[in-house]
Image 1 (tube, one colour):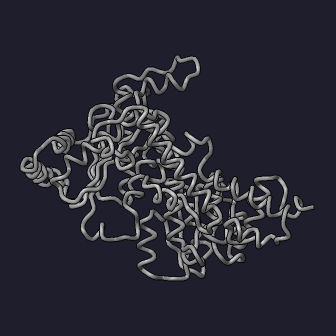
Image 2: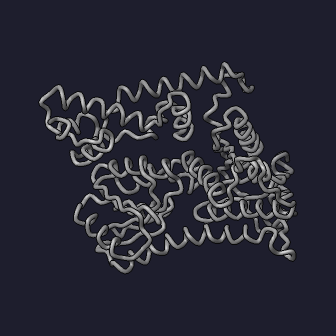
Amino acid sequence: MYNLLIVDDEPLICQGLSSLLTASGISIDYIYTAHSGYEALDYLRMEQIDLLITDIQMGSMSGIELMQQAKIIKPWVQVIVISAHETFQYAQQAMRLGAKDYIIKPLNSEQLLASIRHVLLHMDKSEHAHEQMLSQLGNNEHFRMQAPLPERDQLLGRLEQADPKAQSVIIAELANRYHTIVSGPYVSVLKLKLNSISKTNQEQDGKGAGRSYTAQEERLLRYAALNIASELLDQHWNYCIYEEGEQRITILVQWSEQQYGDSSVDKINQLEMLGRSLQHNIEKYLGLSSVVGISQIFKGLEFMNEAYAQAEKALAWSRRFQDHYVFYFGDFKWDIYGGSEPDEAEIAAQNNMIVERCRAYIDQNYGQKGLTLNEIAQKNHVSPNYLSYLFKKISGYNLWEYVVKLRMEESKRLLLQTDMRRYEIAEQVGYESPEHFSKIFKKYYGLSPSEMKK
């Protein structure tokens, strides 16, 4: 069963689509509707949404902007775009952000339902395919799994330590023998480390008994993780991927000058979305925990060594934060400490300062319409992913829960101590519509604004 979110600034379209889907027989648990991008973001923050169906042009926040913010909140959410504009630029931007379909208004009911069924079926198939692969573990004595193209993987692994001259030779050999293109010129490296497969299973068993995998079964699980990564990357990325040791996967992401010049997508956010999707899907489909280290983006293949080193350093940071899973090198201010790894006291002081600056910014701006996690993170010079983690760890609040808390406390004060109308209070605390404000208020307090006023 899946939860869907329909977003359109025309209420009749939301109502019509909701009725169509309710009667469709598709396996849907709940359908949420929103009439603006900002209202949709609140649902994405507070509810488990599997599929987002959004219009492209909606007042103050477009469908493209909504997709960008949605992917920061939940990178794995699936998206279908509906639009009255048959514009190639819109469709191209939507597809780059991971949209599964782009459907032109007026909507054809059968076409829309077929698209939704296809997306949900693919989600089922992906899960089933990996379950089927895992079901073969230990059940087929003739099954053998070999690492794909081990000689190619060895060549890719040698790039990490090679000097620029040797890199040129390796890159040429990869192109000639395996049609593996390493061209850049913009590059970033992601390193994914699978936690011990046997240890993971023992930890999941409350008694610590767990299941011990054979070497062959562990190889299959690693290959399944490699397949999951490849499926994610195949959609929108120019990349090279290989196994680096028995528990690690390395990904070299590349952009051409033209691709990097497209400013419609924030590349750092895009890398973090990829890292979080990798970690999420490996845990979801294989039951394995993992950590991901991400380098900054470099221009020029001669800086690949530095990119590899940064990803390794970011990955090593997981030793300090064992309840966090995706680490971007740029979040850790290495230059402050002369490039060396800081001690615990220095880390704590730095992180407390980030959270206090963040809290102060929210305290001053919570009433701002359109306030987003991305904006708060940019003001504090860290990624949204890391800021969310730190804020929850140090303050005890989910970051957006804190924003909602301030908005609701102020709206209650205004409701009980002033004669302001509902729409005026909604405006004051940062909500676009009184109806959306009332929904959030009732969810928070268990009473509508009018019921509390009485």
